[in-house]
Image (tube, rainbow, N blue to C red; front, side, top):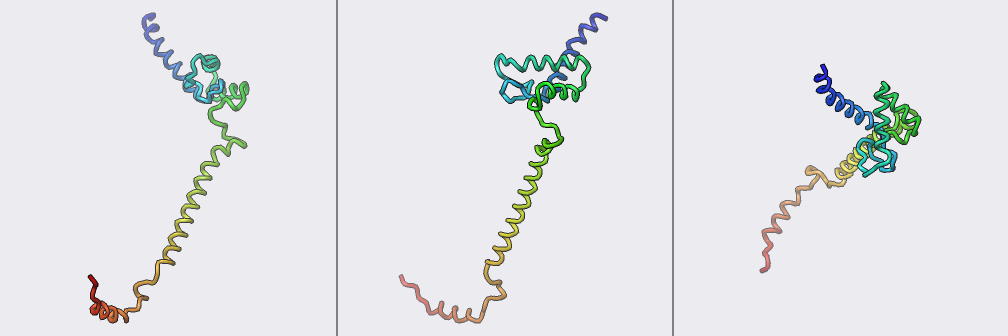
Length: 149
């Protein structure tokens, strides 16, 4: 039994570390680097290790991911969150890119249609509208023409 416990413990700890990293991805390091908390690469960062330890302690205490996010945002403010909550004024962060894309597509379609209709209007007369009665005269003039060397 002890051997089984010793064999399983590293696997369980690895899973716990992965869970801590997963939950930690919801936060930004507060040292000023603006990197995701588990990915902070500052040498001797004074913030990332204590925050990751705090995340691990909250997970060990049985808190869910949502409760941990709520606790961190209460303690450090919304600036610690890696993505804004989808409510209230912060909802604009999710809606504006979609709205901008839709407006951009609408403008592109409008401009393309305008250019197409403008180019058709200025393309010149259709082949049916060309007067073919003068072709004979042009042919006679070309026969009389002798190029100069």
